[in-house]
Structure formats: C-alpha cells, structure tokens
Amino acid sequence: MTPLRVCIDARLGAGQFGGVEQVVIGLAAALSRLDDGEEQYLFLTHPGQDEWIRGYLHGPCRLLHSRRNYLNRRSRAVVRGLAERLPKVGVRFAVRPSDGTVERAGVDVIHFPFQDAFTTDVQSIYQPHDLQHLHLPELFSGWERARREAIYRTHCDRAALVVAMTSWGRRDFVESYGLPAEKVTVVPGGSILSEYPAPTEADLARLRSRLSLPEAFLLYPAQTWPHKNHERLLEALARIRDDSGTAIPLVCPGKQTRHYRQIRELVSTLGLAETTSFPGFVSSLELRGLYELGTALVFPSRFEGWGLPVCEAFDAGLPVASSTATGLPDVVGDAGLLFDPDDVPEMARQLQRLWSDPGLQADLRERGRKRAAQFSFDHTARLFRAHYRQIGGRAPSEEDRILLGSPPPA
Image 1 (cartoon, rainbow, N blue to C red):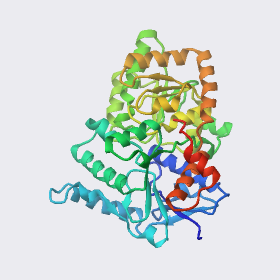
Image 2: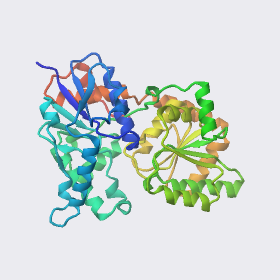
Image 3: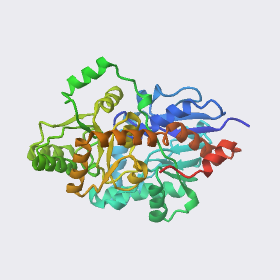
Image 4: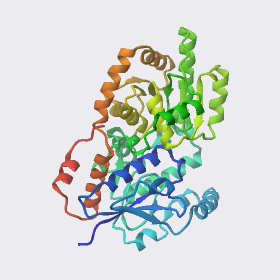
C-alpha cells in the first residue's frame, strides 16, 4: 500500500492570522518529528508566501504550492467579494472550489485548519475553530454573518470530520449546527514557544530597550479585534489605579486591526498612555522574550475557540488570569484566576489580587507548569495522525486506538 498522503491547508500570510497561524506552526513542527509512520504531509501554500512555515517542515513534511500566487488569489478574492454582495449572486459565491492542486498531487486526506476551506472530493477534516458570529452577532455585518454561515455549513456538511479544540466548542458545533455527535471531535493544542528562537540576555535587553518595557508588566498578546475585549481590560486597570493608586503596566503585542483606533482613543480618555503599550506585530523571538520578561498573563477575551496564549503562559511559567468565556475555563482548569469578561469590577479585583500577591503568583506558576504538561503539539500531531489514518482507510495502530478513545484534557 502506498503511503498515506495528507495535505494541510497553510494558505496564510505571516502575521495575519494570529492564533491560527501558531496552531499550524505547532502542528507542522510536531508532524515533522514523527518518524514512526509512513505518512507524507504536504503543506499547501501560495508561491512566495511560505517563509513563515518553511523552517518548521522536515522529515515527512514538505511544501505543496498552489497553482495561484498570493497576489493573484487576493485580486480574485476582491472580485469575488464584490460579486458576493450582488443580489443575484449572493454569499453562496463565497464557497470556493479547489483549483486542482491537491487532486493532482494524489492527496488522500486534506485537513483545513482554519475556516476558509474549499470544496473538493478528497476526504476532508474541517477545523473552523468557533462560531463567534452566532454568539456575538453585533460584531459582524449581516453580509459577514451570511457569508460565514454559507462557508461553515457547507464544509461542516462535506467534511468527514469536524474538529473543535475544546469540549465546549464541540458541544457548540453539535448543538448550533445539528451535526451528528460522532462527526465532531476534540483535538486540543499546546504551546509552541519551544519552537521559537530562545532569546539571549542581549536579546532581552534589546527588547526591553526597543519597547521601553518596565520591570514588571501584564502581558496580553492578541490582535485588536473587538471580541478580544481590550476596552474592558483598560477600564479594569483604570479602576485599579483610581481605587488603590496602583498603576499596572500593560503590554499588548499583536496585529493592529481597524478596531485599534477606538482602543487608542480609550487609552487616552482613561489616562493610561504612560503605562500601556501596543507594539503591534512582533517577531517570534520577541514574543518568546515578552513571555520571559512578563509578570503575568491576562486574557480577557469574550470568545475563543482555544486560547493559545494561556497554554503559552503555562509553559513559560507566567501566572494567568483569564476570562470565563466559552471553553477557557476548561483550558485553565485550576491553574489560573477566572473572571467574567463583561464584569469590569470583578476583572479589576482578580487582576489586583494577582499583581499584589507574590505568594499567589508562585502558586499559579506551579499549577500552570503542571497544567502545561497536559497540552502539547506532539499529542496534537499524533491524535490528528490517528484521525488521518482512520479517514484515509488505513489500519490504526495500538497508539491510535488509545488516543482516539481517550477523553480530551479540555
């Protein structure tokens, strides 16, 4: 029997897709280290847009370039996006067909690790991460909601398997889309900090100087999308300052979206400009450095399919204070403080506790390290491999059977 050929869709631009990009990197690095199977893993990218993933591909993993380059695809996407808005065409035009690349490559199974997949007769795994547009519809236009529904429902129906990263997410897909329970499974992620370059003392000194970092600060790595809830976090920090006189520095790396302007206006209104930093997108070396230099991680998001920074903080030894939204309590377990993301006074209380209590910080660091041991991309890759084999009609190994029968850690 020929080796199973698995394609992982990696048609992303570096720094554009936040946690999704990191999940793909973690999977690529872990699959590259699997030397006990005969599978071949092809990572589908646009020509000229593979620099962000190429260095993580070794062993059974290699690149597969699509027929169209990135600029060509973007120009076609703009034309299609305009066409989708025409009444006689509608958002159904948003569901894209394959360009034939994976079929010509003889792929047996294709894994779509983000929402915008394409239709193909190749057996597929669809990993749309979350249904935020159903739970927070006010953050989307009517056209955006309709477009997401067309894409998500089409690929959920066509896929052999739909993947969520937490048990909460799995229940949400089953209940919201009426999918058969056996069609939706959980494959958790982990931290990828160890895949990033380790900063030297000189690197850390340069980073501290470049970003004018204080000796102690809260870290919140996230793109500035509305659901990331930067506004309520800023209000909580202003409340702490006004009530106790404690000004807690905050550093928020991540791509700055169109919503960033509103956040900056609030920073100015609340008088937090001197203690709040939004450095924008940072390199993988700098991100790892921020985890090493930070005092604690705060994660106030209102909606998450996973919550990768929480796992990274556990791995880095940072104490965590997290939102209770969606599946985050399942990820955090007993290893962090929790707060309602819409309750500013409660958020302020938990952050002040964390900031002012060294004993609590030490306890949460230890709990976080133990929790981190339950999440790894090696486990993620092996579990996905078991699913690839099952969908591709290959005999499962004893490890596969154990992995497929084990309850998820979150």
